[in-house]
Structures are given as structure tokens and as C-alpha cells.
Length: 107
Length: 420
Ligand SMILES: Cc1cc2nc3c(=O)[nH]c(=O)nc-3n(C[C@H](O)[C@H](O)[C@H](O)COP(=O)(O)OP(=O)(O)OC[C@H]3O[C@@H](n4cnc5c(N)ncnc54)[C@H](O)[C@@H]3O)c2cc1C
Ligand code: FES
Image (cartoon, rainbow over all chains, first blue to last red):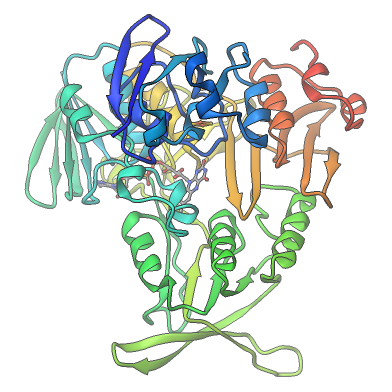
């Protein structure tokens, strides 16, 4: 199972094993990682699961889709080039070791 | 101090989590009548039907999470009675378990309104509220060529879209003269009628139903169609159906509240802005609740949405923690039908004018609702930018003047003007 590491706004570092196909958001929320709010449960409808993908992985993970792109514009924390909605990143073997920083403000 | 939460759904789960996040150290017990840990309902009419998700992906939290937070979740038991005796009380489940509490939280959700037509008991007449319903629908999905959806609301239309995508012959029967009439304006209703028709679904409005038609097969009496009331010339029409999905709204599950002597209206539990019921020792949240309009005014509303369940549960938890945090969250909602993402912010009831932006032909547009010149709500279809701008404006008590908003070329977020 691919591993993903979260850096919470308060600096806490959590590494979890993700189920293949589960999103970066689901993996965090289900296990109680703080900072990802995910109000809509992964429907790309709330922009409260905003993360910054570590440079080293941004190429692997890729760009947001059109709807996600628009949602990110309305996110509560500053949008950066490596911003993604974590519910839209589905874990796969290639993402093993993925590192994301959780955006400080979500709502 | 111990809290018992009745209902292990969206609101019940959030209440428990928010209590712990707020530093509550007493016992927290959630009792849920379904045999599953709390899970999300929205995918049941969407990805789950198309086979894109399994139960684990519906679960809000892992079993270990609840253990770690010292939240006891009792599943498969219904609370059938509750009463106060002095400062504390007891809740009794149908399994005979007795739980004591100091404070009680009600999050029982709602139950589908039944359609009392002749033939209602036929096999294949289905409703969709919980995972069992979804599993039953899914079990019949592959073999069903003809799907009839009764009720053109969100759940019905989502199921219709999923059925159409799976290549089935789909008919939506709606009693009123437009779709989603309770939640959106005629503009959005008409767009959805056309959008579903374009995708090959037959949408029939103003329909009167006569009965469910059935035939016997190996397993017993099974639905084979839906008969419409005779037309002016006395002609009878039967629409063939292997599955009939009825989605004509829900009824709040206020029965336990009524037993406790709490104020209810049509089954809905009446609360104030702090999620307190008519007995302040009992809080309530979610679909089952009638609450003061969160954005002010005299009206009371019942909101059936994830947002409301979550935000109200947070308010209820704060109240239990002795903090007073009035409920003023901007209502929002989404619905996914085929490749159309509808996002709604605010409540449009009582609007007196609208501004339409974007292009309905391109299936990318928004409808802004105004009352007395103030923005009160938006329906956005495939347009998250407009949606987010309005959500933020409403949250800040700000306005977006209608005369400026009508220029679709200008981004709404640049037009937000300071609050009143
Ligand atoms: C198919 C479907 C699709 C939806 N799609 C969307 C969507 O896209 N967007 C959106 O915002 N909302 C959507 N919703 C609505 C959303 O899921 C609800 O508003 C939300 O679940 C309400 O939360 P709740 O906790 O009040 O009720 P529920 O989630 O229904 O939870 C209540 C639970 O309490 C249990 N219960 C009741 N009484 C008792 C008792 N006496 N003892 C023990 N347990 C009891 C019930 O069995 C139930 O499990 C959808 C709902 C459905 C059914
Ligand atoms: S969880 Fe709502 S957009 Fe990701």
C-alpha cells in the first residue's frame, strides 16, 4: 500500500498507508489527521481539503482538472502553483512516499 | 457527565467528533439503528450506483478512530424510549440496553415519504435512504432495462442520470409542472428538464399516477410498470418498469422527540439557533430539525443537506460544551447528475429577481437570486467560480450588485461589495 505523509498546519507530521484508490483526503480524514476538513466528503464541492503537494511529487501527481481548478480559486488559503484538492488525488503505487502540506485555512 | 447521541449518521458522527475536538472528557455514546458505522449518503445515488465505490470508501472514519477518541458506537440498535429523571436520564434500545446520560442529542435524520398507491407492496418498488436500500437497488441494477423514477427531486434525478449512463431506458414522472421545484427557480428547473432529455431520459411533468402494475414471476409479485391516471379521453398509459425508484421527499423522524414531550412540527424537532430543543437539556441536529433561518429573518426552515447536518452538529456540540455559538452558516448543497455539477449557496426562497450568467446551451451557467436588491442565493451549474464567490459574499454578509453581475465576462469575485 502506498504511503502518504501529511504536514499539518501546527507542524505535526503523520505518515499513513493508503488503500489503493482511496484519495489523499479520505486517508487523512478517516484516520483523524487534523486540518483537512472535507465538508463535502470528496465531491469536489467544498474546497476544504486544500493541500500543497511537495515539489518532488507535483509532476507525478499532476495538474487539477477544470472543476477542481475553479474550486481552488475560491479556497480559503492562498492558492499556490502546487495547490490541489486532496479529495481529487487518488493514491496509486506510483505516488508512494507522497508528501503534502495541509493548507492553514480551510473554511 | 455523559452524552448519548441518538442516530449514527452525518450529524451524529459530527457531534461526537466535535465534542472531543472541543475537549469534552465525559462519556460519548452514539447509538445507530443501522448495522454500519457512520457513512456518507450522497454517493448512494451517485458513484456507489455506478459501481465506483465500496463500503469502506463510504465510511466517515475507521473503527480505530472511534476507539482512539473514546467514542462508543453502538450499531444495529434503535433507541425506542428516552426519559429524564431529575438531572439525568435513560435511553432504552430495542435490544433492551439501557444507557444513562446527563445530556441527550438527537440526530435521527429522516425517512422517505411513501407513495400510497395500489401495488405499493410489489417487489421492485424501491426507496433510497440508506445503504441497505442502495444495495437492493444495485442488486437489481444490471438486469433492469426499464427504470421509472417517481419524483423529480435531487435523488430521483441523480438515480435517473446514473441509470441513463448505464444505458437503461429511463422515465422520470413528476407531479408538479417542473423539476426540483422545492429548491430551485423555474430557470434551473427547465435547464435540468432539457439536460436530462438531451441525454435520452424521458421527463414527464404534471403527471397523475393511478397504480403500480405487477406480474408474477418465480419470486412472487413483481412490478412491471406504472399506470398513469386516464387522460381526458379516458386513455390509460402504462410505462414499463423493471425498477421503480420513488423519491418524493422525506419525513423527519421526530417520534422519539415527541415521546420526550419536545416541540415538533410535522415530525420535525424545533430548535433555536443554539440547536437546543424546547427542553434545553436536549440538543438536536440534521435533517430532522426545524431551525431558525440561518441568515436571519422570522422564517423557520428544515434543511436536508450535509452542510446543515455538519454545521448544526458543531453548534449542538458547542452548546453541550457550554459555549454559545449561534448557527449562522451559509447553507450550501451540491448535486451531481451525469456530468452536471450543481452547486447551491444560500436559500432562494422569497427571491424577487434573478440574474443569469454564462450559457445554458454550453451547460455552464449560474442563476443569482436577489430580494430587495440584495443577493440571497445562487444555483451554479458547472461553474464553481461563481458558486464560491457567492458563498464567500453571503458568508461575509456582503452583496454583489445585480447590475454588475449581469456581465458574464466579469468574474463575480471582483464584484463583492462590503457588507451592510
Ligand atoms: C441518496 C442520498 C443522496 C444525498 N445526496 C446529497 C448531496 O449530494 N448533497 C448533500 O448536501 N446532501 C445529500 N443528501 C442528504 C444528506 O445525506 C443528509 O442531509 C444527511 O445525511 C443528514 O444527516 P442526519 O445525521 O440528519 O441524518 P442521517 O445521515 O440519515 O442519520 C440518521 C441516522 O439515525 C438513525 N436513527 C434514527 N432514529 C434512530 C433511533 N431512534 N435509534 C437509533 N438510530 C436512529 C438512522 O437509522 C440513520 O442512520 C443525500 C441523501 C441521500 C439519502
Ligand atoms: S472534500 Fe470537498 S472538495 Fe475535497
